Image (cartoon, rainbow, N blue to C red):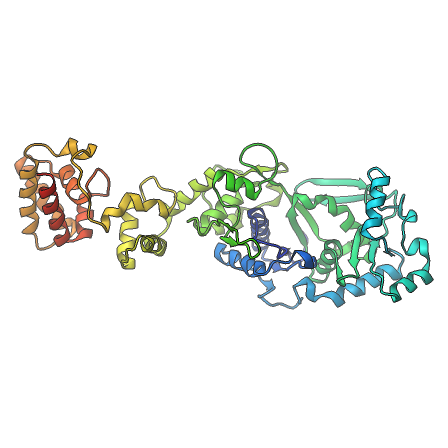
Length: 504
């Protein structure tokens, strides 16, 4: 690290829902910025107008709000380096396109898509570069006068970067170390398109990163091949001294098989690959999201942080504060990380156990609402507290385990638990227990326990399993005193009467 202030950016394209791999990239940027007391910029890359999807930008912002990843400046956050939406920076980019053209570091090309396709068919592994550019229809072959004539006639064109062959390009990557390539393998990338007066990714990112004083570019491995070109562009503009440091993160891989994680994998194996549920405005297709699937944001953050990085210890549960404190880009893996969605479910269970019951109550109340049941936040929290220790990964898993809290049980003499615990003489024991409970004014857990435990010790009766049959209908549920206190005296006695009648 130098004395330069740390400034990172996350710059998604509004072309659809945010992939979970993009969430991890944003998280690593956030952890790095916070650890070094720096800034995180939110920029929107919308230079490809044909791929723009309405609602995608708001979806991305809402995803980060839910996850607790906070930006310091950018689209919807403000700041001194705006505008932060690339489509609003047309005039800025034109200045730098003109600079490259004036200095002979870029040129104008008129080749149509049909002409380029014909060339690709005629020349194996065709690349628009130093070996082929003089065979094409561009300002280098047409001359200045003809170029200006075509422009004045309204012919569409692109601006290509002039890559000089025979130059060694050195890229230092924080994760991957030194990367050296020869410029001969690079093509003359398109930097600007007259059709929509917008730059391509390559020019827009270089200009924006420079003007926004970005110190570190932390992005996915798939962008590593573009790094040498970006180094050349920094040199071409004379910005080599302010070039950011690069860090290219490992891919997220399929849980099984080979290749990178895709939505198809999630659909096939039953897990989300998007942070929030996504409703495609074109097809109407609905894709599942981590939030709507019942994941806690803290669990998702912890899970993602350890996909491609680890703190060097056996600690797995790390709060955002601990992640910020321990994060180190140099400890990121160079190889891809398998997306172990089952481990993600384990993380969610661990965070459920550690989360205050009152925080979980709204999610449980929504589940009850789907069943046509309304209750208070306090009672919802009480049930969550009694039942979340069961082997569940999500709050939605609670309903079949705790329906009896809200619905009177159906009694079945053939139920295995009932057959085992409702014998001859059990009805008389339960009638005696009912009379004891009816005489208790204070129906708290403590008062019930004191009275029933003393009665059981004096009579030698073990009432708890038959009592469970009365209140639950089978062998599930929490401690009996907790359950009876939750139901209240009247409902407890009512269910005991119903069981005595049904199981007579």
